[in-house]
Length: 442
Image (cartoon, rainbow, N blue to C red):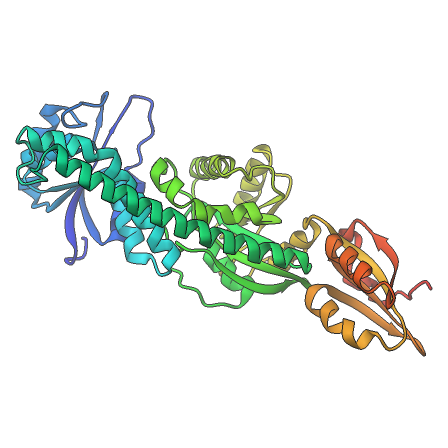
């Protein structure tokens, strides 16, 4: 029995014969938004221009609304204004679609200025695409009281929306430029950018908390994260910034994907992407969500970035099931797959080692700092690289480090009179911590 609080809702999807049913995902979204799903209706047929579902089905739905006492009807399908209006007249209750439902969730969970601007942008762009149809309906008397001023009112309202969209886009552009500048500066000082991503609910924020020691909000439901959160950490000794990004969802409305470009653009600046996968779900769901995630990565132009598939929540399945899921992901083309439990901290050390192994441009080097110059350099080295081992002589200091190649070249050039790069090994992953006992070759 559902809880008594919240708005009682009927969920509806109209789909084609071979099209997948998404009512279970709509159900979860409705619950996150605060609705109580009390009944689900599905119809297999082509879309109807007047009601989305067939007119006969609309009448059946109206009877069901009265019978079960529903207060809202939520469609998975995107509704045109005329469809929403016709349905509300027949059903006698409020009607909304999945786009509006997701926006409601975003409004509730948006905390930063960036997230709020992106939500407003998505809302305004949708209004702009519908405005002419709304006005046509109003002029025909089908939407009484809605902007009855005709073409002049339409022009004024449309101009207002376009101006506001332009202002929001400019603000988001500035945020994007600032973020890109910060991430570039971090790369220049040797710090790697690692982005956590994946289908919503896969456990990104839990892993973020595990890797960073943070206590970011986690509830296991869709879209707990709307704005990217970043923390500087050391992964197996290597300095990096971990970013927790918004989760993907299948069939995300294009206007929402476009509006959240600023958040997804974080992935373009990442050196390495961790794609989280919920291993506790049925195999067909895992494959569907992984494919949806890959498609989204392709849409934002980061499909060729270095990537590790992280098979999360292995504590909820058997070892045999872990093996099956590892094999399935490898067949999908993932070269590196790491099974973990972010909640139980299972195999986290193995994941950290794989992260370091897959960081592009990470090298192992031996440095000689001459004379007493090391006092001014050691703080930079310890902050922006991993100092694996040090050895002092009467005048010089030798260090073995893991660092970004580009930054190492910068240090070598800037302090050429104080520092000498004795040895560089391009494949940093060949280094193991157990090698600390080795002596330097001078």
